[in-house]
Length: 331
Picture 1 (cartoon, rainbow, N blue to C red):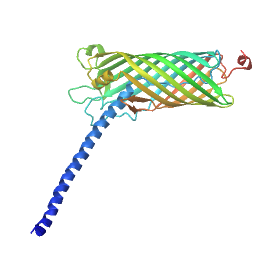
Picture 2 (picture 1 turned 135 degrees about the vertical axis):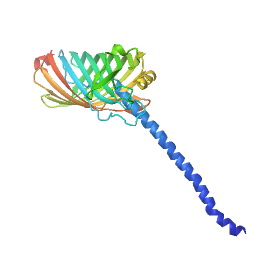
Picture 3 (picture 1 turned 180 degrees about the horizontal axis):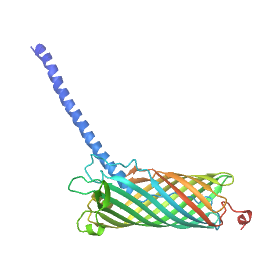
Picture 4 (picture 1 turned 60 degrees about the horizontal axis):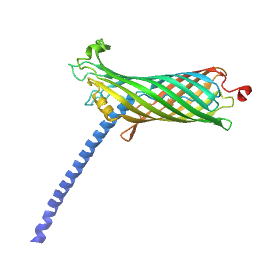
């Protein structure tokens, strides 16, 4: 009897075992999908969070020589296609859109010795985000992130061979941060400020974060130039560490995700590789173009939300030649 009945039970037992295996398999797949979605959401948030700090504007002093003084005007823009609103996002910040991202820098440098350049600079970084209203009862909003910085730097540079130079630079700067979210109203599909910011301070309709940061930056670069030094190409890598000294939160409304992350992330490492191309006129004037990739290291991971590109105009006010004369070399 066993030999007759037992074989008939095998398919049922096999099907039952397969059902258990399938259930475990499907449950595992669903768990992995949920984990992946959570990681993707977290990564998307941190990718946007990386945009809330100022970005390094590359410059080079590789060809500076003794007693040369230079004034720099720099402007940097960000390519914003990689930071788009997520229509299925659960938070207003994730559903927001980056509409403007600019950095400006005014620098002054002097080379008191042939291989050493000292200088200072004033910089401003500006970001603007647009928040679409999640409900009919709410209004559209815009967030503004502004950084005001003053920096001091020293650079060591030297030439080697006929057409090459290297440089290393240390920069220390202080940074004042202001992050706000402002209600807007729409007229003919155009968004306007509804009222001055001060009138919303007691309505809880905008978030405000104020803080101060200290930053240390180290830059290394390798340059190549032609025989008369009119053209210069440079590859650079900048690494900087930012640390919040103080933070003040006022009605964190639209920026609640950012305020929470900022409380946790008081120090942060940034990296920026860049390629610079410059043309130096025989006297006074130089123009530089660059492309770079700002990267923030957050929770052990690297986030590079937006490539950057920029332009710099330089004016040599003392020792205006692009290379020293024979008399100046012997000074």
